[in-house]
Image (cartoon, rainbow, N blue to C red; front, side, top):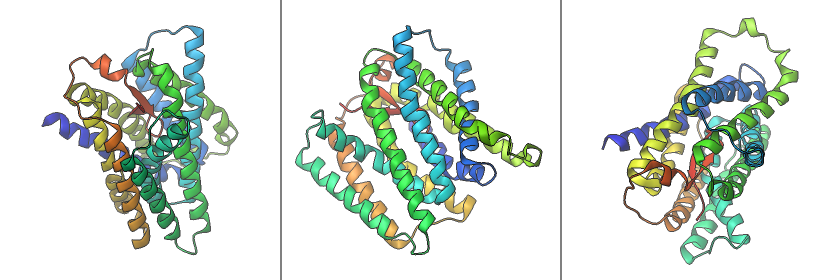
Length: 314
């Protein structure tokens, strides 16, 4: 019971990251906001996990993975937040990424589209269409931002797909730290031109506390808690909790930012939820909680939108 409560806490932390990141984007350029969050998170992960050294080839592969998942995803994620509400991102990203993953792996012949999966994929695509139709007519920037969120979800899916071969040989903890560090470095290079334009002296304590929160809790602490849950209840049960993320994300966006989605968008989100659930339900078999953590960890890939693990496609 206690570990399941910790899982709910992890989902709450991940959901809150959308609204908290939006608060950061309101104060500094989106590239700077992304870099600060992952700089703090990377430092915490390096201290907490102390990953082993990798051969040059594997380190380069993990770094390349980080350029797609951590850098590519988060650059687009924070850009989307500068254009659209965090409420939209908290629905689009967690729901669209697994759908992209199933669709691409099916095209590559790595996933069989069973009737249930096909129904789920169709339902999710229809839900995405309804969600976008529900965007207010006055929201041209919002539409662009939501499309950017979709591109971010595609990066997340790519990270999942291309990370699987590397994670068949290496611990996901090790790959995650190397990939996150490489992605953070790239985020820093992109943010460098904007750093001089930030009025650092005008950033108040609330801004810095929010950055510390983002780096330490949704990006670092949730990582440790999630692995603990995976080790005790198994990856299938742990990943099923992912569907709580939009609920927490929407709640935090409403409380912290006063944001909401329209009724039509709500209908689209519900269809996306059902579609993603059908695909996940059919993809991940029921399994008993396993004992050793490393065996479970090796069946995981990481989620670039948090820097945390996500079940690999099987």
